[in-house]
Length: 161
Ligand SMILES: [Zn+2]
Image (cartoon, rainbow, N blue to C red; front, side, top):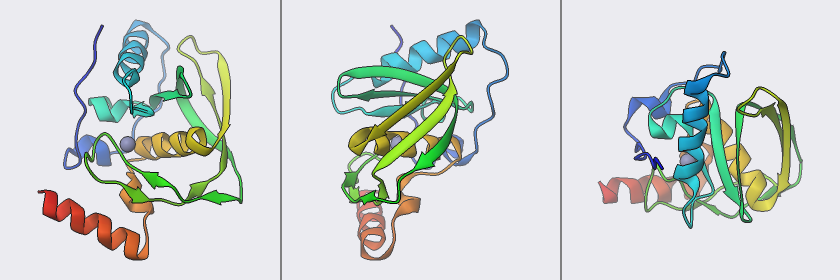
């Protein structure tokens, strides 16, 4: 069991676009195992590799009692319908903000063995998919906020420091 420590905002790895996975080897299997073990906690919906300090395109999710992973994920479909619930991030503890996301999302990628996978979901699953792919592009949910929600979140972040 390896539950890896979570990197927090301020760590450059969270702001660096992650590299494509090129070989589906033992190292990738170990990374995927760590991602799935690290997300296997109440209140954790997803963990992207950069959050445990690894600059590769892979994430795990834990939604509705289902734990899984995707390697080299691509968002292939987002609904026009949106949702506006509170979102948070393990890398930005204590900060929650209403974040607009597509209500429905489809992600395609590969499993740890290199077999194609397609994940789709609505609500929390769609939010988790969008949030984790953002991490792989060096983005965090605060970047998605606008207007008063953004101001309030940045103020809370300053006050927390
Ligand atoms: Zn996050």
